[in-house]
Image 1 (tube, rainbow, N blue to C red):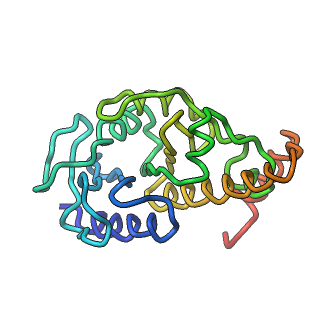
Image 2 (cartoon, rainbow, N blue to C red):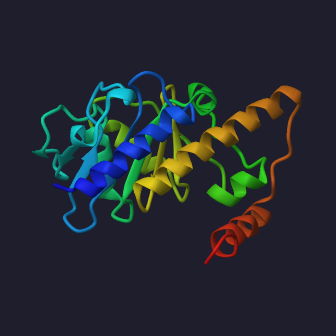
Length: 214
């Protein structure tokens, strides 16, 4: 089932270590199939270099395994909670990327100090509260805290990003870490000025509606 999505997810999972967003077996990507509503997600505890498309697990929104011989990611329940509560979301990524997770360890949101953040996120990257892994609790914090941003930090934990599909969620995860690393470096030199909200709105509008090939 869903062979094309399984193959796509394998390629996208390999982007995580390539972009230094994960270590060993941490992190995961999922994709909701718009036709069936089923979700494809990474298996638990499989090293990225050993991962194959057929290892991906297909589940329904209630968490029942529809196809797959391996146990799905320990974050599956939280991914499914997000999909149920945010019907516009088609892809989710979770990472413990180093610089963004440093902000999460402090429970700190990332204000808009950079035009790149204004472009991509249209505002601060928020930080939600603490939740334990394994159930829906992390998904609940994501839904409560993410607001209009495509990304949210979780206190003492890491990063969740959402998108219309898995590719856009992976791109957002890459950009979260890039922004976090640059902001961290800036904070070592001094206190940067936050970009005013009305200018952030202009940056985001240009990036979303003018930038690139339309």
